[in-house]
Length: 125
Image 1: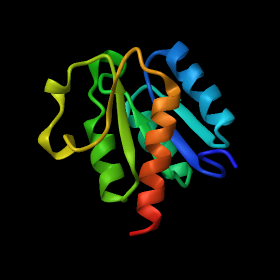
Image 2: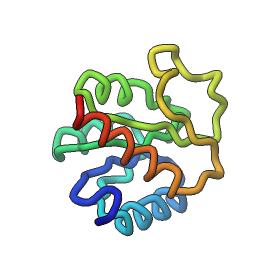
Image 3: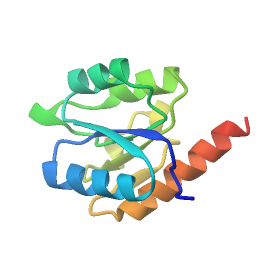
Image 4: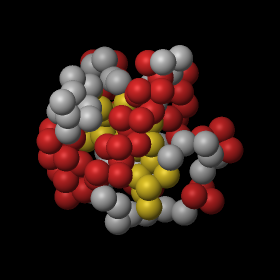
C-alpha cells in the first residue's frame, strides 16, 4: 500500500516545474493531486471544489502574494498542511510556526512522508 493511498492533496505552488514534480511524486505515492494553484484565489477555488485531505503550500505565490490566508482556511477546516518554499521561515506567522517547513530544493519524498505522518496522527485523534 502506498503512503498516501486514496488521499486528495492540494498543491499551491507558483513554479510549474516544481508543481509537476510534486504531482508525479504524489501520484506515485497513491494520492490524487489537486492543482497546482498559483494564487490564493485559485487555491480557494480548488478547496471549494474538492474534498482536500492535506496540502503542500509554497509561501510566496504569483505576483508576490502570500499563501497564509489559504493556510488559515486549511487550519480552520482541520486539514493538515506543510510549507515547501525557498523563502525564509522568518516570513512565517507564529500561528503557522508549528507546521513542517521544507526548504527548496527539497526531496518530494520528504514531504510525502510528513503528510502521511500528519494524516495518520489525525486519524488517531
